[in-house]
Image (tube, rainbow, N blue to C red; front, side, top):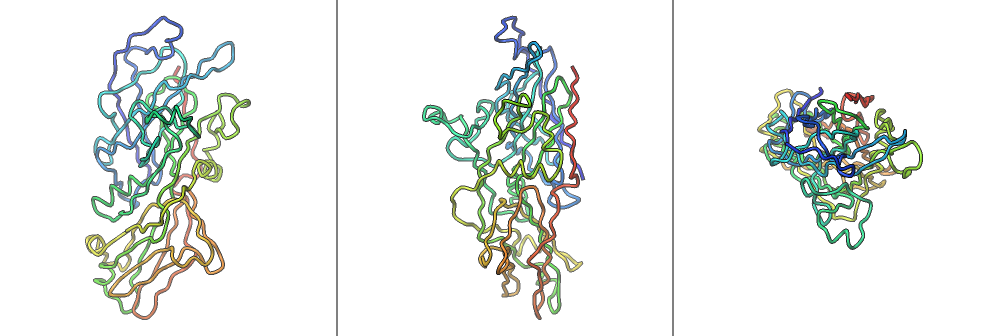
Length: 380
C-alpha cells in the first residue's frame, strides 16, 4: 500500500538580484518548494506504517540547470543538505528549524533526497551546509567536517516490535530518491527506493508446542554485517560527456525493477567491520504481539551482503522453551546473497518433534510496484 507523505516548506523572503552571477538563486515571489513523498512497501507489516515522529534523517540536495543557446549548463549546490523530519507519525515531513527554500526566478532544478542513519568522519551530514557526497576528498577538503565522502550507514541491532525497535527499524532503512530536471512543480514527487534488504520471519506453531511457548520465543539474525558505505550517484547533464558511473539524465534506469536494483547496488560497498547480532523479537515483544493463529510474523532490515557456502554461523536464531535452532542463510555447498531492494520471507515451523525450514526463502520486490515511472512534468 502506498503511503504519501507531504512536506509544506515555509516561505522565505529572498530578494531577487539582477547580477547575472547571482540570478541562479533568485526566487519567484512566494513560490516555496514543496514535496510529496512516496515509499513503496515501506511498512513493517502490510497494514501499519511505523515512522518515528521527529525522524530528522531526511536530506535533500538540488542543482540548477540553465539552457544557454540550446546547451544545458549545471550549477551545483542550489540546496545543500536541506534537513527534513517527520512532523507526526505516519503523517508528513517538515523542515528542521527555520530553513526553507524557494524556486529560482530562472533555470530548472533537479533533486536528490536521502534517508539514512549516517555517522563518522566526513560522513555526518551537516544540515543545510554539507555539499553532495564525493567519491574521495583531498586532505584540505577532508579537514572540513561538513564535506562528505561515501556515507557510512549503520543498521541498528535492536529491531524489536516495540517503540525503540520500531524507531530503529525506520532508521535502518537507507533510501534514495532522484528527480530529473524540472521547472516549477508543486509538489515535487520524491519516489524513494530501498537500498537495504528486508527479512520477514514467519514462525509457525508445530506439533507439541503451545501458543505460550510460541509467543515467548526470541528471534535474532546473527553474525551479519550492519554497516555499509553509500555513494549516491547524480544524473548526467547530457547523454554524452559525463562520468560513466552517473545515472542517465532522465533517470530512466530507475524505472524498471531489475535495472534499478543493479544501479542502486552499485552505490554500496561493505567496509571492514565486526559481525553483529540483530534482535528481531524477544519474549516481551513476542508476547505483546501474541498470536492466536499459530503464526507469528516478525521483520527486520539488514545490509545487503553475501554468505559463503558452508557458513554455519550466520542465519536466523530462534530460542523457545530452552531449545535453540539456527537456520543458516547459506547452504552446505551453495552461497547466498541478500540484494538491495528485495524482501526475503522465511517460514519456520517450531515443534517438540522436529523443526522444519527451507534454505531457500521466498524472494519478492520490496514494494508492490516493479515498474515506477519518473513522472515529473515541468510546470514552467
